[in-house]
Length: 353
Image (tube, rainbow, N blue to C red; front, side, top):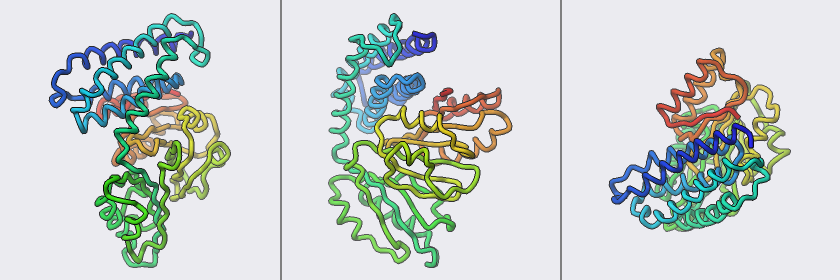
């Protein structure tokens, strides 16, 4: 096993040891701060993603999501404390075994590492159970720009949706934008509010020409990808249409917003980093049901590009939680300084892909 993987295993073994010690000591969940635990798990997820360790990446993503749920209902910690400790102990054993192994991650079949599949299955089922009262929808509204103050429909529609759940991930972010005649968003419906098909029929607005709704729960795994270009674009990149099934997409001047069917996050990032997208500056992508997005920077992280990068990142973090930033190419002192600033002030991990 190469030195990069050895370093990855050693650093994450220490992180897992620290997590186990912290969780063992928690007696009063209502007084505990789980934010630091989530940050630590996010670091493990980021590093595992960078070395393409799909098992640890998938499992740490599930653990991060569980801790998010526990932050909202801290008494769930008691229910899952044993399972968390059991899982983290097995992750620790897997890292210890990997450190002694000489095979690549793709060919490893040691029992300590393969056992992580059991925890992935368990926590997937647990999180699905905890989220069973939620339903996810993709919504796109075609607006009639000839109507006076047509853009106000965005605010009115959001107020309507908030009675039944949580709308998020808007495009465009500027709700008063008069240039675009579309409004795209994700929506999490509270199950006890009723059937969404019937709910949406209650909404009426003369400026809303058409409302398209997709029930995301009917699909195994949906990702949202946003492409930020230097110049205007009118189509979804062929690198996406040729490699993934596209559910829907919209072009907003130099932003292309699309939704694809895919369950392999590494395949998405490999495609985005290894294909030639022309004048593309950066990309964000996220699983539909998750709050956090991942940023991929395709420009060199150097002083001459930083104003563009900072402007894009500022726009993104203004309404989204970013879990990490991956970059391709070279960076200088100024680029590293920006990444360190984001890590320190926004808990955003980073790494070269």
